[in-house]
Every structure is written in C-alpha cells, then in structure tokens.
Length: 37
Image (cartoon, rainbow, N blue to C red):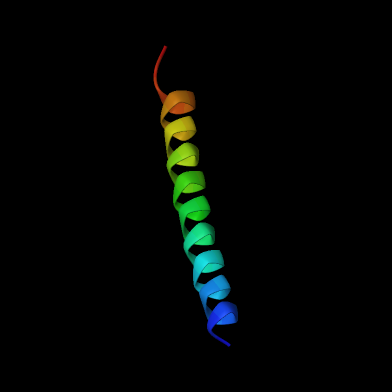
C-alpha cells in the first residue's frame, strides 16, 4: 500500500513537472514565433 501510494505521488509529481515544462516551452515558442523580426 505504501509503495503504491509513493509511486502514485511520484508519477503525479513527474506529470506536473512535464506539464509545467511543456507550458513553458509552448509559451517560449509562442513568444519567439510572434516576436517581430
């Protein structure tokens, strides 16, 4: 039970980091593509 909950918490933490990283990359790409050249 403990190992299972720990794995779920770890997976949730990794998922949140991936979502945050993807959001930052998307925002950065949007800024670069929309920046005047």
